[in-house]
Image (cartoon, rainbow, N blue to C red):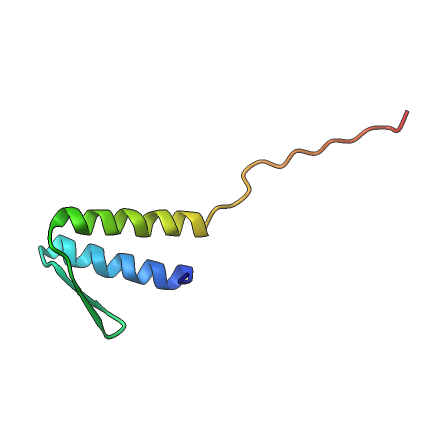
Amino acid sequence: MADLVQLTAWRDALMAARYQGVRTVEYDGKRITYASDGEMAAALADLNRQIAGATDRISVVRIQSSKGL
């Protein structure tokens, strides 16, 4: 599993290529060519899911106490 910085870099490279209308993405010396925009969208969705999973934080903390009676 890649770290958050790497996932973000991959997503940014993929988004930039998609917005430019290019189907080939290069990062870290690797080149990937996608067959369609739908395939790029699926890859972006997967990267966004992984990034969201890596940044999940606790949103609710419940504290329970008693006087011991």
